[in-house]
Length: 425
Ligand SMILES: Nc1ncnc2c1ncn2[C@@H]1O[C@H](COP(=O)(O)OP(=O)(O)OP(=O)(O)O)[C@@H](O)[C@H]1O
Ligand SMILES: [Mg+2]
View (tube, rainbow, N blue to C red):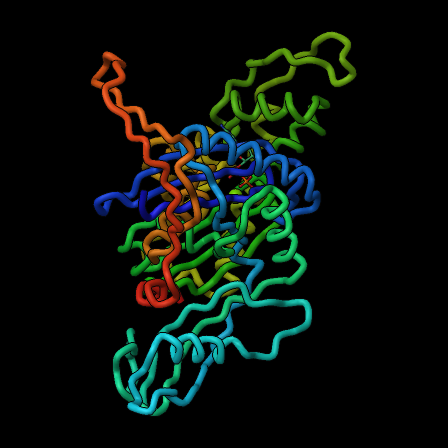
């Protein structure tokens, strides 16, 4: 078993777990699990116990599907909840013969991490951009080269200590260790965007249950990220309040009859729904629902456009806008509405892989792909001593392997950083 990654999307409506592998250069999803979660608000953990339970449930599902026991995972953090800082590290090469070793690289990276941060912030990741040996720059792998002075230019990613510590504590309480905290749009973009879009300029908007994470990529770099605390649940809430139905009924109505444009429903159409007080049923006009949804969706699209305009980003969006996440994805008429609103090409993207072909998996599947590309892996063991192979459709057990695999699938720092000169910043 090789190159296996486990990723966890701590979303405002659900926890998703994806177990993925690279096998013969092919990215495969081998386990998936999702569990509703009430412990996260606007992408931030507010109830550790509720989140722990949802993580355990979703991990259990993914484990059963893949026959793999999960010991660690990569976890998401919303792009807008992080800050990127440029940093430089400098060390003297330690060996007498001046050959640069892994230890020198580790030391210089540690040196780059020494920056003054506000007390409520901490570093969650470091992305080396280039090494410089005695003034010669653009070196990707300095090990084995000779020099006196080794420098690194790096990007440090920082986030709120409270947020980060709660993520780590929650995941650990669920029985897993944290392999890394990954900026969500870097993951999502790996699976939802294509290289041309990232090069030309594109806004990736992940509209979830309670947030819209707006990110802009240009020349393959992430140049902007912001979280807006509005999402698909606001549409449901509007229907619930204005039509006086429960949140669950409003969610059902939204999914079944929802439209982005009220012109798409006929004025006389009605549906019957339980009264909120539980006494009998009442009739609701679909035009009312359509108008409620149209108003909220217009507001969401307006906020996105306004953010892009305010930050002078519209001119960079040669490839237009790619929307993902569950919030607006399946709503009838949304494509045309969004296209008219932005006056730019709009596409709805999701992971095009069996098992996760749904926009709510964009973050979890994307993070798995992103970290696998960097040759980072999670710690897992094969759960079953016995791997059963089936012969065609006969379901006949033909062979089994009895080796219990328990390989530690960790790559060292060097392996990791060789692949780690992210295109992204
Ligand atoms: N078929 C559907 N039609 C309309 N909305 C849907 C549909 N399926 C899911 N949604 C909405 O998608 C949202 C959940 O999307 P998603 O899983 O991307 O959010 P999340 O990742 O949990 O939240 P966030 O990213 O905001 O933290 C909910 O608001 C839900 O109502
Ligand atoms: Mg999400």
